[in-house]
Image (cartoon, rainbow over all chains, first blue to last red):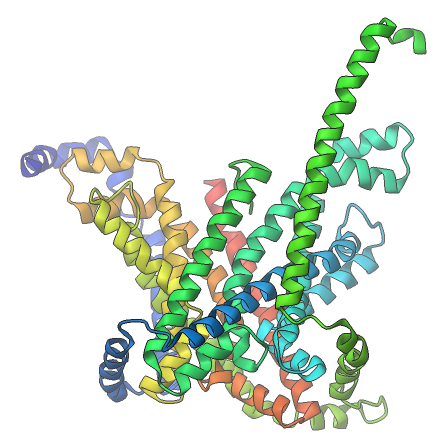
Length: 288
Length: 294
């Protein structure tokens, strides 16, 4: 049937082309641009492969080994009940790291983000300085923060909490101040026109608008931090990552797959709960 | 002026005020309950996460003092010489940073191509079979949820040390992340062109090529660029597990207490990340701007 329709639409191609010349004329300029982009992207790709010295001869052997690993992973098995309890505890630590890290980061960032918002603080220099500082904090990866905090408070999940807090501080500061800047000016002007002070404007004009947005951003970060908190154990900052890295290094593949399944389940549960909460707070609205 | 506001009779006013107070009280109670739950969760998490405030208070001085320790000694008189000494390894680090960028680039490109291929299968508005959509979605979810550094750990064992495991790990994670975002874009397209191509007898591939891709391509590129930014940060720490890039040198400097090297590498990473953010943001803005003006 499809073929019949095809013949039908191709039967009179020349006439159709004549009737709609704009649609059938090739746009060479557009095409050259597209082709140029693709060629540049491909050239950079090939340069990358050459410069990184990707060993293609090791590809096949590695692939075979990978399949072997996967075969060894089945079925997922924690070994013993004792081990399983240990892993569950580590998962709990990971959740604690994500939760407290996000909360602490948000609490720290909240006052600072006022300084970085153009419509709250009139001083341009102070605002730009705060912005750049937040950018710098954000430029350092959570894993690097974890390394630093392990040096300060020692190994364990506490270092992880502080690390997540630090990197979230940078991200939240930026997001919050952007939310402030995107807020509607009219309520603020309303408060000002009835004789409210600057603080009144912020409290009654600005905050009621942005609090739901901030809350949903915090929840969203809690979701994504659950994922990133699973790995900071690799540098000794507690949580399930420590166990996972250890079991990978000693090639206990069944335990590795058990841990991965545990992570998948935990992340799915957190995603579900927090997206429910998010929709409850802001309604079914998309937040950038 | 008060005469302009009509006053309600006392009885009616009282009942309205009571209603208002009741409504506010309900809202307050709900907020208080929410705060109490939050506090309880925070306390439970603090117990679970071994939060130790005395240890924190005792050791907090190490945190600023670490930054003091890694701050290089620069004096104005011999600024140039001091800078040269601080950045003594700039040649090696610059090369490693280029490696890091290329790992991120190659990984992002591979992942974007794979995500592009898979996203159409994961879109419920293009694929009839629920099973295919379900399988594609679960696969993307798996790629996305397992952290890239875990993939890197496993790949290092399979392929040996070097950038290859880093590239593959980033590619797989990117496949999952971009595949999901792409699929969401595809599910929100205008269905009319799709119906048009199907009505004139186009195959599934032609439908995707002529009806879907023109609608989504600029969004896809914008998302891929955003992912590239994220992957540059990710690639910078791939070296922690031996998967190439600058991370190897950084973790070595941290572990061996080469203080000035730590700050030098950190500064280089931060500058690179900011530059990449700046460039991709410019490109993204141009892309989206062109789309909007069309």
